Length: 634
Ligand code: ARG
Image (tube, rainbow, N blue to C red; front, side):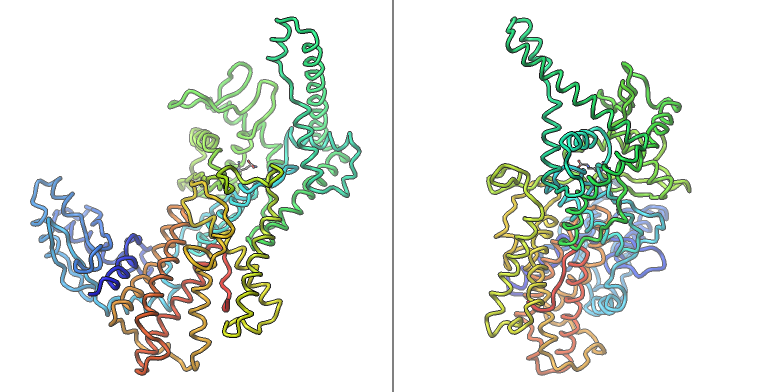
Protein backbone atom coordinates (compact mmCIF):
# COMPACT_ATOMS: atom_id res chain seq x y z
CA UNK A 1 0.00 0.00 0.00
CA UNK A 2 1.47 3.44 -0.84
CA UNK A 3 2.49 5.50 2.18
CA UNK A 4 0.00 8.28 1.48
CA UNK A 5 -2.90 5.86 1.56
CA UNK A 6 -1.51 4.24 4.66
CA UNK A 7 -1.28 7.60 6.39
CA UNK A 8 -4.78 8.55 5.29
CA UNK A 9 -6.18 5.30 6.64
CA UNK A 10 -4.28 5.66 9.82
CA UNK A 11 -5.38 9.24 10.35
CA UNK A 12 -8.89 8.22 9.49
CA UNK A 13 -9.38 5.62 12.13
CA UNK A 14 -6.96 6.33 14.90
CA UNK A 15 -8.23 7.63 18.23
CA UNK A 16 -11.87 7.06 17.51
CA UNK A 17 -13.97 5.77 20.34
CA UNK A 18 -14.31 2.07 19.84
CA UNK A 19 -17.02 0.88 22.02
CA UNK A 20 -20.35 2.29 22.90
CA UNK A 21 -22.82 -0.10 24.30
CA UNK A 22 -26.30 0.40 22.90
CA UNK A 23 -29.48 -0.25 24.82
CA UNK A 24 -30.68 -3.77 24.07
CA UNK A 25 -33.26 -3.06 21.38
CA UNK A 26 -31.05 -0.70 19.39
CA UNK A 27 -28.57 -1.41 16.64
CA UNK A 28 -25.02 -1.45 17.95
CA UNK A 29 -22.03 0.09 16.30
CA UNK A 30 -19.79 -2.33 14.45
CA UNK A 31 -17.00 -1.98 16.97
CA UNK A 32 -19.56 -2.25 19.75
CA UNK A 33 -20.65 -5.62 18.36
CA UNK A 34 -17.09 -6.90 18.07
CA UNK A 35 -16.44 -5.68 21.58
CA UNK A 36 -19.43 -7.67 22.90
CA UNK A 37 -18.39 -10.81 21.06
CA UNK A 38 -14.86 -10.59 22.42
CA UNK A 39 -16.14 -10.00 25.95
CA UNK A 40 -18.22 -13.16 25.66
CA UNK A 41 -15.23 -15.10 24.32
CA UNK A 42 -13.06 -13.92 27.20
CA UNK A 43 -15.74 -15.06 29.66
CA UNK A 44 -15.73 -18.47 27.97
CA UNK A 45 -11.96 -18.72 28.17
CA UNK A 46 -12.03 -17.72 31.83
CA UNK A 47 -14.85 -20.22 32.41
CA UNK A 48 -16.68 -17.47 34.22
CA UNK A 49 -19.96 -16.40 32.58
CA UNK A 50 -20.15 -13.28 34.77
CA UNK A 51 -16.72 -12.00 33.72
CA UNK A 52 -16.93 -8.70 31.86
CA UNK A 53 -13.40 -7.89 30.74
CA UNK A 54 -12.72 -4.99 28.38
CA UNK A 55 -11.01 -6.46 25.30
CA UNK A 56 -9.17 -3.13 24.84
CA UNK A 57 -9.95 -2.63 21.17
CA UNK A 58 -7.93 0.11 19.53
CA UNK A 59 -7.57 1.27 15.96
CA UNK A 60 -4.42 -0.25 14.43
CA UNK A 61 -1.62 2.11 13.68
CA UNK A 62 -0.44 -0.09 10.81
CA UNK A 63 -2.86 -1.41 8.21
CA UNK A 64 -0.81 -4.62 7.93
CA UNK A 65 -2.15 -5.38 11.39
CA UNK A 66 -5.77 -5.00 10.37
CA UNK A 67 -8.27 -2.27 11.19
CA UNK A 68 -8.31 -2.82 14.92
CA UNK A 69 -6.33 -4.58 17.60
CA UNK A 70 -7.58 -6.14 20.82
CA UNK A 71 -4.83 -5.72 23.40
CA UNK A 72 -6.39 -7.47 26.36
CA UNK A 73 -4.20 -10.59 26.29
CA UNK A 74 -1.08 -8.87 27.58
CA UNK A 75 -2.57 -7.42 30.77
CA UNK A 76 -4.91 -10.32 31.43
CA UNK A 77 -2.22 -12.98 30.98
CA UNK A 78 -0.07 -11.21 33.52
CA UNK A 79 -2.86 -11.41 36.10
CA UNK A 80 -3.49 -15.08 35.30
CA UNK A 81 0.17 -16.03 35.12
CA UNK A 82 -0.19 -17.27 31.55
CA UNK A 83 1.64 -16.61 28.30
CA UNK A 84 -0.07 -13.71 26.48
CA UNK A 85 0.16 -15.41 23.10
CA UNK A 86 -1.48 -18.57 24.42
CA UNK A 87 -4.26 -16.56 25.97
CA UNK A 88 -4.72 -14.57 22.75
CA UNK A 89 -4.94 -17.80 20.75
CA UNK A 90 -7.54 -19.14 23.18
CA UNK A 91 -9.63 -15.95 22.91
CA UNK A 92 -9.42 -16.08 19.11
CA UNK A 93 -10.49 -19.73 19.10
CA UNK A 94 -13.50 -18.89 21.29
CA UNK A 95 -14.65 -15.90 19.21
CA UNK A 96 -17.11 -16.23 16.37
CA UNK A 97 -17.06 -12.98 14.38
CA UNK A 98 -18.96 -14.53 11.47
CA UNK A 99 -19.82 -11.95 8.82
CA UNK A 100 -18.14 -9.08 10.65
CA UNK A 101 -14.47 -9.74 10.14
CA UNK A 102 -11.86 -11.93 8.51
CA UNK A 103 -10.40 -14.67 10.73
CA UNK A 104 -8.46 -12.91 13.49
CA UNK A 105 -4.70 -13.20 13.79
CA UNK A 106 -2.44 -13.16 16.78
CA UNK A 107 0.67 -11.04 16.32
CA UNK A 108 3.75 -10.04 18.30
CA UNK A 109 3.56 -10.66 22.04
CA UNK A 110 -0.23 -11.28 21.90
CA UNK A 111 -2.03 -8.61 19.90
CA UNK A 112 -5.25 -9.81 18.30
CA UNK A 113 -5.56 -8.26 14.84
CA UNK A 114 -9.03 -7.64 13.46
CA UNK A 115 -9.76 -6.87 9.82
CA UNK A 116 -13.35 -6.01 9.02
CA UNK A 117 -14.99 -7.57 6.01
CA UNK A 118 -15.85 -4.91 3.41
CA UNK A 119 -19.37 -6.33 3.34
CA UNK A 120 -19.68 -5.71 7.10
CA UNK A 121 -18.63 -2.09 6.69
CA UNK A 122 -21.07 -1.69 3.81
CA UNK A 123 -23.95 -3.31 5.72
CA UNK A 124 -23.36 -1.08 8.71
CA UNK A 125 -23.22 1.99 6.47
CA UNK A 126 -26.54 0.96 4.92
CA UNK A 127 -28.03 0.78 8.41
CA UNK A 128 -26.50 4.12 9.30
CA UNK A 129 -27.97 5.88 6.29
CA UNK A 130 -31.50 4.91 7.30
CA UNK A 131 -31.09 4.90 11.01
CA UNK A 132 -30.30 8.23 12.49
CA UNK A 133 -26.75 8.40 11.09
CA UNK A 134 -25.69 5.74 13.54
CA UNK A 135 -26.41 7.84 16.61
CA UNK A 136 -27.56 5.54 19.37
CA UNK A 137 -30.17 7.10 21.61
CA UNK A 138 -30.11 7.16 25.36
CA UNK A 139 -33.44 6.13 26.86
CA UNK A 140 -32.98 7.71 30.31
CA UNK A 141 -36.16 9.77 30.75
CA UNK A 142 -34.82 12.04 33.49
CA UNK A 143 -34.06 15.53 32.27
CA UNK A 144 -30.54 16.93 32.26
CA UNK A 145 -30.05 20.47 33.55
CA UNK A 146 -27.46 22.66 31.89
CA UNK A 147 -26.57 25.84 33.73
CA UNK A 148 -25.25 28.20 31.08
CA UNK A 149 -24.77 31.86 30.15
CA UNK A 150 -25.62 33.00 33.70
CA UNK A 151 -24.57 36.62 33.28
CA UNK A 152 -24.69 39.09 36.11
CA UNK A 153 -27.23 41.86 35.91
CA UNK A 154 -25.77 45.35 35.94
CA UNK A 155 -22.32 44.20 34.94
CA UNK A 156 -20.96 44.05 31.42
CA UNK A 157 -21.12 40.64 29.89
CA UNK A 158 -17.67 39.24 29.46
CA UNK A 159 -16.13 36.70 27.17
CA UNK A 160 -16.55 34.04 29.85
CA UNK A 161 -20.32 34.35 29.51
CA UNK A 162 -19.97 34.05 25.75
CA UNK A 163 -18.00 30.83 26.21
CA UNK A 164 -20.50 29.47 28.70
CA UNK A 165 -23.31 30.12 26.22
CA UNK A 166 -21.52 28.56 23.25
CA UNK A 167 -20.28 25.48 25.11
CA UNK A 168 -23.52 24.98 27.03
CA UNK A 169 -25.59 25.24 23.87
CA UNK A 170 -23.39 22.69 22.06
CA UNK A 171 -23.61 20.21 24.94
CA UNK A 172 -27.37 20.72 25.13
CA UNK A 173 -27.69 19.98 21.41
CA UNK A 174 -25.56 16.83 21.67
CA UNK A 175 -27.59 15.51 24.60
CA UNK A 176 -30.84 16.34 22.83
CA UNK A 177 -29.57 14.58 19.73
CA UNK A 178 -29.28 11.45 21.85
CA UNK A 179 -32.91 11.84 22.80
CA UNK A 180 -32.40 13.32 26.27
CA UNK A 181 -34.60 16.10 27.61
CA UNK A 182 -32.41 19.09 28.36
CA UNK A 183 -33.46 21.94 30.61
CA UNK A 184 -31.39 25.03 29.96
CA UNK A 185 -31.11 27.17 33.07
CA UNK A 186 -29.82 30.71 32.79
CA UNK A 187 -28.80 31.26 36.41
CA UNK A 188 -28.67 35.04 36.18
CA UNK A 189 -26.88 36.94 38.89
CA UNK A 190 -29.94 39.13 39.51
CA UNK A 191 -30.09 39.34 43.28
CA UNK A 192 -28.16 40.43 46.30
CA UNK A 193 -26.10 43.30 47.59
CA UNK A 194 -24.18 44.13 44.38
CA UNK A 195 -27.43 44.86 42.60
CA UNK A 196 -28.84 46.77 45.51
CA UNK A 197 -25.67 48.86 45.48
CA UNK A 198 -26.09 49.72 41.82
CA UNK A 199 -29.78 50.46 42.18
CA UNK A 200 -29.12 52.69 45.16
CA UNK A 201 -26.45 54.56 43.20
CA UNK A 202 -28.71 55.07 40.20
CA UNK A 203 -31.53 56.31 42.43
CA UNK A 204 -29.23 58.76 44.19
CA UNK A 205 -28.08 60.06 40.82
CA UNK A 206 -31.73 60.29 39.67
CA UNK A 207 -30.92 58.37 36.51
CA UNK A 208 -33.92 57.87 34.23
CA UNK A 209 -34.24 54.09 34.36
CA UNK A 210 -36.46 54.02 31.29
CA UNK A 211 -33.58 55.32 29.20
CA UNK A 212 -30.96 53.16 30.86
CA UNK A 213 -28.13 51.79 28.71
CA UNK A 214 -25.76 48.97 29.64
CA UNK A 215 -22.87 51.45 29.77
CA UNK A 216 -24.74 53.52 32.41
CA UNK A 217 -25.27 50.41 34.45
CA UNK A 218 -21.69 49.37 34.14
CA UNK A 219 -20.57 52.85 35.14
CA UNK A 220 -22.87 52.88 38.18
CA UNK A 221 -21.61 49.43 39.14
CA UNK A 222 -18.03 50.61 39.19
CA UNK A 223 -18.79 53.78 41.11
CA UNK A 224 -20.83 51.80 43.63
CA UNK A 225 -18.04 49.27 44.12
CA UNK A 226 -15.55 52.09 44.54
CA UNK A 227 -17.77 53.76 47.14
CA UNK A 228 -17.70 50.80 49.50
CA UNK A 229 -13.93 50.48 49.46
CA UNK A 230 -12.20 51.34 52.71
CA UNK A 231 -8.81 50.56 54.19
CA UNK A 232 -9.19 49.60 57.85
CA UNK A 233 -5.66 48.25 58.05
CA UNK A 234 -4.20 51.41 56.57
CA UNK A 235 -6.25 53.36 59.09
CA UNK A 236 -4.76 51.38 61.98
CA UNK A 237 -1.26 51.98 60.72
CA UNK A 238 -1.94 55.66 60.22
CA UNK A 239 -3.28 55.91 63.75
CA UNK A 240 -0.27 54.12 65.24
CA UNK A 241 2.06 56.45 63.45
CA UNK A 242 -0.13 59.43 64.37
CA UNK A 243 -0.37 60.61 60.76
CA UNK A 244 -3.29 62.90 61.48
CA UNK A 245 -3.90 63.94 57.88
CA UNK A 246 -3.95 60.40 56.67
CA UNK A 247 -6.15 59.30 59.58
CA UNK A 248 -8.73 61.95 58.75
CA UNK A 249 -8.69 60.95 55.11
CA UNK A 250 -9.07 57.24 55.83
CA UNK A 251 -11.75 57.85 58.45
CA UNK A 252 -13.77 59.83 55.96
CA UNK A 253 -13.38 57.02 53.45
CA UNK A 254 -14.51 54.48 56.03
CA UNK A 255 -17.55 56.57 56.93
CA UNK A 256 -18.47 56.90 53.28
CA UNK A 257 -18.13 53.17 52.73
CA UNK A 258 -20.24 52.35 55.77
CA UNK A 259 -22.92 54.77 54.65
CA UNK A 260 -22.99 53.41 51.12
CA UNK A 261 -23.24 49.88 52.42
CA UNK A 262 -25.98 50.69 54.93
CA UNK A 263 -27.94 52.51 52.32
CA UNK A 264 -27.66 49.60 49.86
CA UNK A 265 -28.71 47.19 52.57
CA UNK A 266 -31.86 49.27 53.07
CA UNK A 267 -32.57 48.96 49.36
CA UNK A 268 -32.05 45.20 49.54
CA UNK A 269 -34.42 44.93 52.49
CA UNK A 270 -36.98 46.95 50.55
CA UNK A 271 -36.57 44.62 47.58
CA UNK A 272 -36.88 41.57 49.81
CA UNK A 273 -40.09 42.96 51.26
CA UNK A 274 -41.45 43.55 47.78
CA UNK A 275 -41.55 47.36 47.79
CA UNK A 276 -43.36 48.00 44.49
CA UNK A 277 -41.29 51.03 43.44
CA UNK A 278 -37.98 49.31 44.14
CA UNK A 279 -39.08 46.07 42.52
CA UNK A 280 -40.16 47.86 39.35
CA UNK A 281 -36.84 49.73 39.22
CA UNK A 282 -34.93 46.49 39.81
CA UNK A 283 -36.82 44.93 36.90
CA UNK A 284 -35.68 47.79 34.69
CA UNK A 285 -32.06 47.02 35.50
CA UNK A 286 -32.66 43.41 34.53
CA UNK A 287 -34.40 44.40 31.31
CA UNK A 288 -31.51 46.64 30.39
CA UNK A 289 -28.96 43.86 30.87
CA UNK A 290 -31.11 41.27 29.17
CA UNK A 291 -31.55 43.44 26.07
CA UNK A 292 -27.85 43.02 25.35
CA UNK A 293 -27.95 39.35 26.32
CA UNK A 294 -30.75 38.68 23.83
CA UNK A 295 -28.89 40.65 21.19
CA UNK A 296 -25.86 38.41 21.77
CA UNK A 297 -27.98 35.24 21.71
CA UNK A 298 -29.62 36.37 18.52
CA UNK A 299 -26.29 36.83 16.75
CA UNK A 300 -25.09 33.52 18.08
CA UNK A 301 -28.23 31.62 17.10
CA UNK A 302 -28.06 29.85 20.46
CA UNK A 303 -31.14 28.00 21.60
CA UNK A 304 -31.58 30.18 24.66
CA UNK A 305 -34.33 32.66 25.40
CA UNK A 306 -36.38 34.34 28.14
CA UNK A 307 -38.09 31.03 28.88
CA UNK A 308 -34.78 29.72 30.21
CA UNK A 309 -34.20 32.52 32.72
CA UNK A 310 -34.25 31.43 36.32
CA UNK A 311 -31.97 33.80 38.12
CA UNK A 312 -30.71 33.83 41.68
CA UNK A 313 -33.75 35.92 42.67
CA UNK A 314 -35.98 32.90 42.00
CA UNK A 315 -34.47 31.19 45.04
CA UNK A 316 -34.53 34.18 47.40
CA UNK A 317 -37.41 32.88 49.53
CA UNK A 318 -36.03 29.36 49.62
CA UNK A 319 -32.66 30.23 51.15
CA UNK A 320 -33.77 30.25 54.78
CA UNK A 321 -35.39 26.83 54.49
CA UNK A 322 -32.40 25.45 52.57
CA UNK A 323 -30.10 26.48 55.38
CA UNK A 324 -32.60 25.13 57.91
CA UNK A 325 -32.53 21.72 56.18
CA UNK A 326 -28.76 21.59 56.47
CA UNK A 327 -28.83 22.74 60.05
CA UNK A 328 -31.51 20.34 61.29
CA UNK A 329 -29.82 17.42 59.54
CA UNK A 330 -26.65 18.28 61.43
CA UNK A 331 -24.77 18.73 58.15
CA UNK A 332 -24.22 22.44 58.82
CA UNK A 333 -22.74 23.64 62.11
CA UNK A 334 -22.44 26.98 63.82
CA UNK A 335 -19.02 28.55 63.53
CA UNK A 336 -18.32 31.96 65.10
CA UNK A 337 -21.91 33.03 64.58
CA UNK A 338 -21.98 31.81 61.00
CA UNK A 339 -23.22 28.51 59.64
CA UNK A 340 -20.84 26.25 57.71
CA UNK A 341 -20.70 22.83 56.11
CA UNK A 342 -17.41 21.11 56.92
CA UNK A 343 -15.73 18.47 54.76
CA UNK A 344 -13.62 15.59 55.96
CA UNK A 345 -10.90 15.90 53.37
CA UNK A 346 -10.22 19.62 53.56
CA UNK A 347 -9.87 22.31 56.09
CA UNK A 348 -11.87 25.18 54.66
CA UNK A 349 -15.61 24.71 55.23
CA UNK A 350 -18.39 26.06 53.02
CA UNK A 351 -20.09 29.13 54.45
CA UNK A 352 -23.84 29.01 53.92
CA UNK A 353 -25.05 31.76 56.27
CA UNK A 354 -23.00 34.72 57.38
CA UNK A 355 -22.89 35.86 61.00
CA UNK A 356 -25.10 38.84 60.07
CA UNK A 357 -27.73 36.39 58.83
CA UNK A 358 -27.03 37.07 55.14
CA UNK A 359 -26.94 34.28 52.57
CA UNK A 360 -24.30 33.67 49.94
CA UNK A 361 -23.77 32.68 46.33
CA UNK A 362 -23.26 29.10 47.56
CA UNK A 363 -26.53 29.10 49.52
CA UNK A 364 -28.37 29.97 46.32
CA UNK A 365 -26.59 27.21 44.45
CA UNK A 366 -27.67 24.70 47.10
CA UNK A 367 -31.28 25.86 46.82
CA UNK A 368 -30.94 25.52 43.04
CA UNK A 369 -29.69 21.94 43.33
CA UNK A 370 -32.65 21.11 45.54
CA UNK A 371 -34.96 22.55 42.89
CA UNK A 372 -33.20 20.91 39.95
CA UNK A 373 -33.13 17.47 41.53
CA UNK A 374 -36.40 17.40 43.44
CA UNK A 375 -38.69 19.66 41.41
CA UNK A 376 -37.29 19.29 37.91
CA UNK A 377 -36.31 15.65 38.52
CA UNK A 378 -32.95 15.89 36.77
CA UNK A 379 -30.34 13.16 37.17
CA UNK A 380 -27.49 15.08 35.65
CA UNK A 381 -26.58 18.68 36.49
CA UNK A 382 -24.01 20.38 34.29
CA UNK A 383 -22.55 23.77 35.18
CA UNK A 384 -20.80 25.44 32.29
CA UNK A 385 -18.82 27.99 34.25
CA UNK A 386 -15.35 29.53 34.24
CA UNK A 387 -12.64 27.26 35.73
CA UNK A 388 -11.95 29.82 38.43
CA UNK A 389 -15.11 28.67 40.21
CA UNK A 390 -13.78 25.13 40.61
CA UNK A 391 -13.54 25.23 44.42
CA UNK A 392 -17.00 26.71 44.70
CA UNK A 393 -18.57 23.87 42.76
CA UNK A 394 -16.55 21.21 44.53
CA UNK A 395 -17.86 22.51 47.85
CA UNK A 396 -21.43 22.90 46.69
CA UNK A 397 -21.57 19.45 45.08
CA UNK A 398 -20.05 17.81 48.15
CA UNK A 399 -22.48 19.63 50.43
CA UNK A 400 -25.37 18.41 48.24
CA UNK A 401 -24.06 14.85 48.51
CA UNK A 402 -23.76 15.15 52.28
CA UNK A 403 -27.41 16.08 52.58
CA UNK A 404 -28.41 13.29 50.18
CA UNK A 405 -29.44 15.41 47.19
CA UNK A 406 -27.55 13.13 44.84
CA UNK A 407 -30.61 10.93 44.33
CA UNK A 408 -33.79 11.69 42.42
CA UNK A 409 -37.17 11.02 44.03
CA UNK A 410 -37.30 7.71 42.15
CA UNK A 411 -33.91 6.70 43.51
CA UNK A 412 -31.78 7.46 40.46
CA UNK A 413 -28.20 8.57 41.08
CA UNK A 414 -27.55 12.23 40.28
CA UNK A 415 -24.31 13.23 38.63
CA UNK A 416 -22.94 16.74 39.17
CA UNK A 417 -20.39 18.15 36.75
CA UNK A 418 -18.64 21.46 36.60
CA UNK A 419 -17.86 21.87 32.90
CA UNK A 420 -14.99 24.24 33.52
CA UNK A 421 -13.38 26.32 30.82
CA UNK A 422 -10.31 28.51 30.52
CA UNK A 423 -9.93 32.17 29.63
CA UNK A 424 -9.91 33.89 26.30
CA UNK A 425 -6.71 35.84 25.84
CA UNK A 426 -5.76 38.74 23.62
CA UNK A 427 -2.77 38.52 21.30
CA UNK A 428 -0.68 39.81 24.21
CA UNK A 429 -1.60 36.58 26.10
CA UNK A 430 -3.47 38.62 28.69
CA UNK A 431 -7.25 38.35 29.25
CA UNK A 432 -9.03 39.85 26.28
CA UNK A 433 -9.60 43.59 26.74
CA UNK A 434 -10.29 46.55 24.52
CA UNK A 435 -7.59 49.13 23.99
CA UNK A 436 -9.03 51.27 26.77
CA UNK A 437 -8.58 48.33 29.12
CA UNK A 438 -12.30 47.70 29.55
CA UNK A 439 -13.84 44.32 29.22
CA UNK A 440 -14.42 43.85 25.55
CA UNK A 441 -17.96 44.39 24.33
CA UNK A 442 -19.40 41.14 23.12
CA UNK A 443 -21.63 42.74 20.55
CA UNK A 444 -18.71 44.53 18.91
CA UNK A 445 -16.77 41.29 18.87
CA UNK A 446 -19.58 39.32 17.26
CA UNK A 447 -20.32 42.13 14.83
CA UNK A 448 -16.71 42.17 13.76
CA UNK A 449 -16.77 38.41 13.20
CA UNK A 450 -19.89 38.71 11.07
CA UNK A 451 -18.60 41.56 8.96
CA UNK A 452 -15.27 39.77 8.44
CA UNK A 453 -17.19 36.70 7.26
CA UNK A 454 -19.31 38.83 4.97
CA UNK A 455 -16.30 40.57 3.46
CA UNK A 456 -14.75 37.19 2.69
CA UNK A 457 -17.93 35.83 1.13
CA UNK A 458 -18.37 38.93 -1.06
CA UNK A 459 -14.73 38.75 -2.11
CA UNK A 460 -15.12 35.15 -3.22
CA UNK A 461 -18.45 35.78 -4.93
CA UNK A 462 -16.83 38.38 -7.16
CA UNK A 463 -14.99 35.57 -8.94
CA UNK A 464 -17.17 34.45 -11.88
CA UNK A 465 -16.06 30.86 -11.28
CA UNK A 466 -17.22 30.87 -7.67
CA UNK A 467 -20.38 28.87 -6.85
CA UNK A 468 -21.63 31.95 -5.03
CA UNK A 469 -21.19 34.27 -8.00
CA UNK A 470 -24.43 36.09 -8.75
CA UNK A 471 -26.22 35.09 -5.57
CA UNK A 472 -28.48 37.65 -3.93
CA UNK A 473 -26.79 40.15 -1.63
CA UNK A 474 -28.94 39.16 1.32
CA UNK A 475 -28.04 35.50 0.89
CA UNK A 476 -24.35 36.36 0.71
CA UNK A 477 -24.68 38.47 3.85
CA UNK A 478 -26.41 35.66 5.70
CA UNK A 479 -23.73 33.20 4.61
CA UNK A 480 -21.00 35.60 5.69
CA UNK A 481 -22.60 36.07 9.10
CA UNK A 482 -22.85 32.29 9.50
CA UNK A 483 -19.16 31.99 8.68
CA UNK A 484 -18.13 34.67 11.16
CA UNK A 485 -20.21 33.22 13.98
CA UNK A 486 -19.19 29.67 13.04
CA UNK A 487 -15.55 30.76 13.25
CA UNK A 488 -15.96 32.16 16.77
CA UNK A 489 -17.89 29.14 18.00
CA UNK A 490 -15.53 26.61 16.51
CA UNK A 491 -12.51 28.36 18.03
CA UNK A 492 -14.26 28.11 21.37
CA UNK A 493 -15.18 24.46 21.05
CA UNK A 494 -12.25 22.90 19.22
CA UNK A 495 -9.69 23.02 22.03
CA UNK A 496 -9.62 21.26 25.32
CA UNK A 497 -12.11 23.43 27.25
CA UNK A 498 -9.72 24.07 30.10
CA UNK A 499 -7.04 25.53 27.88
CA UNK A 500 -6.83 29.29 27.70
CA UNK A 501 -6.81 30.31 24.07
CA UNK A 502 -5.79 33.36 22.14
CA UNK A 503 -8.61 35.11 20.35
CA UNK A 504 -7.17 35.51 16.88
CA UNK A 505 -9.85 36.49 14.42
CA UNK A 506 -7.53 36.14 11.40
CA UNK A 507 -6.76 32.55 12.22
CA UNK A 508 -10.25 31.46 13.26
CA UNK A 509 -11.92 32.89 10.18
CA UNK A 510 -9.49 31.28 7.74
CA UNK A 511 -10.85 28.72 5.28
CA UNK A 512 -7.76 26.62 5.89
CA UNK A 513 -6.65 24.64 8.92
CA UNK A 514 -8.78 23.28 11.72
CA UNK A 515 -11.38 26.07 11.68
CA UNK A 516 -15.14 26.42 11.52
CA UNK A 517 -15.10 27.96 8.03
CA UNK A 518 -12.91 25.07 6.78
CA UNK A 519 -15.58 22.57 7.87
CA UNK A 520 -18.40 24.70 6.51
CA UNK A 521 -16.52 24.91 3.24
CA UNK A 522 -15.94 21.15 3.19
CA UNK A 523 -19.68 20.67 3.58
CA UNK A 524 -20.46 23.18 0.82
CA UNK A 525 -17.99 21.41 -1.49
CA UNK A 526 -19.73 18.08 -1.00
CA UNK A 527 -23.05 19.80 -1.65
CA UNK A 528 -21.68 21.20 -4.90
CA UNK A 529 -21.23 17.65 -6.26
CA UNK A 530 -24.96 17.17 -5.99
CA UNK A 531 -25.59 20.55 -7.58
CA UNK A 532 -23.47 19.41 -10.56
CA UNK A 533 -24.87 15.88 -10.83
CA UNK A 534 -27.67 15.09 -13.27
CA UNK A 535 -29.93 14.29 -10.35
CA UNK A 536 -30.55 10.67 -11.25
CA UNK A 537 -31.23 8.52 -8.20
CA UNK A 538 -28.36 6.69 -6.52
CA UNK A 539 -29.87 5.51 -3.23
CA UNK A 540 -30.66 2.01 -4.49
CA UNK A 541 -27.05 1.26 -5.40
CA UNK A 542 -25.33 -1.13 -2.95
CA UNK A 543 -22.18 0.45 -1.51
CA UNK A 544 -18.85 -0.70 -2.92
CA UNK A 545 -15.72 -0.07 -0.88
CA UNK A 546 -12.96 -1.47 -3.05
CA UNK A 547 -10.52 1.44 -2.94
CA UNK A 548 -8.59 1.95 0.32
CA UNK A 549 -9.88 5.54 0.50
CA UNK A 550 -13.45 4.37 0.18
CA UNK A 551 -12.90 1.87 2.94
CA UNK A 552 -11.24 4.48 5.16
CA UNK A 553 -14.04 6.95 4.54
CA UNK A 554 -16.61 4.26 5.31
CA UNK A 555 -14.95 3.42 8.62
CA UNK A 556 -14.75 7.10 9.43
CA UNK A 557 -18.45 7.60 8.81
CA UNK A 558 -19.25 4.67 11.06
CA UNK A 559 -17.44 6.38 13.93
CA UNK A 560 -19.95 9.27 13.98
CA UNK A 561 -22.51 7.70 16.31
CA UNK A 562 -19.92 6.54 18.85
CA UNK A 563 -18.32 10.01 18.82
CA UNK A 564 -21.63 11.63 19.77
CA UNK A 565 -22.07 9.16 22.64
CA UNK A 566 -18.51 9.88 23.68
CA UNK A 567 -19.04 13.66 23.74
CA UNK A 568 -22.17 13.22 25.85
CA UNK A 569 -20.21 11.17 28.37
CA UNK A 570 -16.97 13.16 28.41
CA UNK A 571 -18.60 16.59 27.96
CA UNK A 572 -15.75 17.45 25.61
CA UNK A 573 -17.08 19.05 22.43
CA UNK A 574 -13.57 19.20 20.94
CA UNK A 575 -13.84 15.47 20.28
CA UNK A 576 -16.68 16.16 17.86
CA UNK A 577 -14.68 18.98 16.27
CA UNK A 578 -11.71 16.67 15.83
CA UNK A 579 -13.91 14.01 14.35
CA UNK A 580 -15.48 16.38 11.82
CA UNK A 581 -12.06 17.67 10.87
CA UNK A 582 -10.77 14.12 10.32
CA UNK A 583 -13.87 13.26 8.36
CA UNK A 584 -13.22 16.23 6.07
CA UNK A 585 -9.62 15.12 5.60
CA UNK A 586 -10.66 11.56 4.90
CA UNK A 587 -13.18 12.89 2.40
CA UNK A 588 -10.44 14.98 0.73
CA UNK A 589 -8.23 11.90 0.26
CA UNK A 590 -11.19 10.01 -1.11
CA UNK A 591 -12.09 12.83 -3.46
CA UNK A 592 -8.54 13.05 -4.78
CA UNK A 593 -8.26 9.32 -5.46
CA UNK A 594 -11.81 8.40 -6.39
CA UNK A 595 -13.51 10.51 -9.06
CA UNK A 596 -17.23 10.72 -8.46
CA UNK A 597 -19.17 12.34 -11.31
CA UNK A 598 -16.44 11.58 -13.86
CA UNK A 599 -16.51 7.85 -13.20
CA UNK A 600 -17.86 5.94 -16.19
CA UNK A 601 -19.17 2.86 -14.37
CA UNK A 602 -22.64 3.90 -13.14
CA UNK A 603 -22.52 1.47 -10.20
CA UNK A 604 -19.25 2.92 -8.90
CA UNK A 605 -20.48 6.46 -9.53
CA UNK A 606 -23.68 5.87 -7.58
CA UNK A 607 -21.89 4.12 -4.75
CA UNK A 608 -19.54 7.10 -4.44
CA UNK A 609 -22.46 9.50 -4.54
CA UNK A 610 -23.92 7.59 -1.63
CA UNK A 611 -20.70 8.04 0.32
CA UNK A 612 -20.73 11.76 -0.51
CA UNK A 613 -24.32 11.96 0.61
CA UNK A 614 -23.45 10.42 3.97
CA UNK A 615 -20.49 12.79 4.35
CA UNK A 616 -22.66 15.83 3.70
CA UNK A 617 -25.32 14.61 6.11
CA UNK A 618 -22.85 13.82 8.87
CA UNK A 619 -21.06 17.16 8.42
CA UNK A 620 -24.33 19.09 8.52
CA UNK A 621 -25.57 17.15 11.53
CA UNK A 622 -22.27 17.48 13.39
CA UNK A 623 -21.99 21.21 12.69
CA UNK A 624 -25.56 21.68 13.86
CA UNK A 625 -24.68 19.98 17.15
CA UNK A 626 -21.88 22.52 17.55
CA UNK A 627 -24.45 25.24 16.86
CA UNK A 628 -22.76 26.08 13.54
CA UNK A 629 -24.71 26.65 10.35
CA UNK A 630 -23.81 24.68 7.23
CA UNK A 631 -24.52 26.83 4.15
CA UNK A 632 -24.98 24.95 0.86
CA UNK A 633 -22.80 27.31 -1.12
CA UNK A 634 -19.73 29.22 -0.06
N1 ARG B 1 -23.26 34.62 37.56
C1 ARG B 1 -22.08 33.86 37.81
C2 ARG B 1 -20.86 34.60 37.26
O1 ARG B 1 -20.96 35.33 36.32
C3 ARG B 1 -22.12 32.51 37.18
C4 ARG B 1 -23.22 31.61 37.66
C5 ARG B 1 -22.95 30.19 37.34
N2 ARG B 1 -23.99 29.33 37.77
C6 ARG B 1 -24.22 28.93 39.02
N3 ARG B 1 -25.21 28.13 39.24
N4 ARG B 1 -23.45 29.33 40.00
O2 ARG B 1 -19.77 34.41 37.78
